[in-house]
Length: 187
Image (cartoon, rainbow, N blue to C red; front, side, top):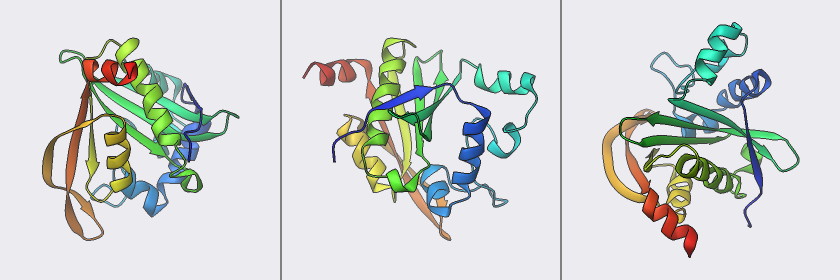
């Protein structure tokens, strides 16, 4: 299926509320970051169940932090479907990207690919990063395939780093450098 056009926007409290609901779905949470040891769905950078009603000062501290860029993913007709997070290590010039399409009915329709492409454009051309990397559980073969399609290279394996369904699984670390990104976009 052809890729769908998306818009990346600032995160709103309503977006966080939808993230909270999406993460209650086992499939969604397991393909994002899994669950904390105490059972709640994991989310890096903030806790959706808390941030939905957090004081403005706390909201600003999270969503204006230059080391954590959160963007909501909207369809071209402005329907919220997910979130992108880039955790930036400024001293290294790199960022770890995570993507969540919370609407399961829209999985495998190109939205994740298009949103990741838009985030890479920001990371390399606006934020001045040199390297973007990701850490994907080995059982999320769709995400691995998407990152390979976007020219990410396998950089390593984190052994048994992801608990899932009563077992432990490896994570695949993949990355793309600025020159690889530029060369892919020239072609």
